Image (cartoon, rainbow, N blue to C red; front, top):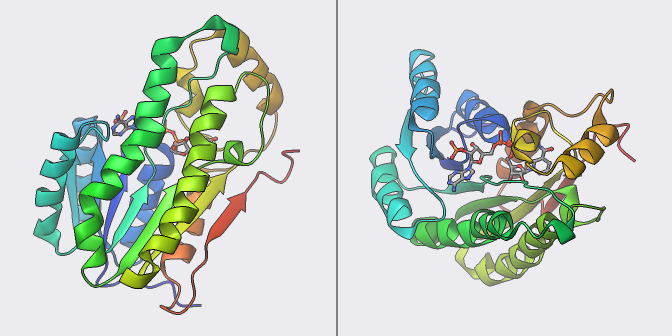
Amino acid sequence: MDLDLTGRVAVITGASSGIGEATARTLAAHGAAVVLLARRGDRIQAIQQELALEGHSALAIETDVTDAASLQRAVVGARELGRVDLLVNNAGVMLLSPFDEARVAEWKRMVDTNVTGVFLTTNAFLDDLKDGGGDIVNISSVAGRTTAKNTSVYNATKWGVVGWSDALRQELIEHDVRVGLIEPGAVETELAGHIASEAAASVFHDRFDGMDILQSVDIADAILYMASRPKWAAVNEILVRPSKQP
Ligand code: NDP
């Protein structure tokens, strides 16, 4: 199977940790020039330097996906590596809580990052992507297909991405841009560490403690597979769960 991305320029949001970091490393290892976006500039710069030492073409641009002006700077900066033809919308937050804890600021942060942030990022890079075709890979979640207690607002954001992604897929066919969706189950990353609700954190840990959950590279491999298909084959959707996740 040909997984070569030589000549491609990939932008990865949320590249400072977890799935985004693994994706940047995996895509670079398969020949792509990679642009790492995240708010923690020190983290993405350190990854960029490692990639450069390994001989890869990489750029780190401190970016907040909820801020259109910040994204515009990223678009201009990314062109240093060439026309962007692969966008991985990965940045996200999962601030789980029982709905009646009414953590309104956390709801807003999830909607701003997981939904509006994905719209703003896609809009910012769309002209580049349409100019010759390419791929958009959206990271939703199993939580965009199934629901559970304490995950209602996170569910709403990820279900939103699922619906938006497939509608966009149909709009962009005429521009030779493929739009695909990756839906990870539980992956060992920093994501759950930000849950502030004690009730939700304890239910979450009860579900997954002791289970062999996914590693970020498992998802990076799915992204690589999706983006490296020949022009005539669009892999629209991949759902990956840990083998033991019900
Ligand atoms: P991490 O917490 O390790 O990564 C999240 C990334 O998002 C970080 O790099 C963070 O960077 C970035 N980010 C958050 N807010 C912003 C922002 N406003 N602007 C730019 N970047 C931002 O978790 P994961 O790797 O697990 O998460 C990646 C994606 O995978 C998310 O969309 C998540 O919902 C999804 N997912 C994860 C699963 C899991 O079990 N881990 C399961 C299903 C889906 P920084 O803070 O530096 O800005």
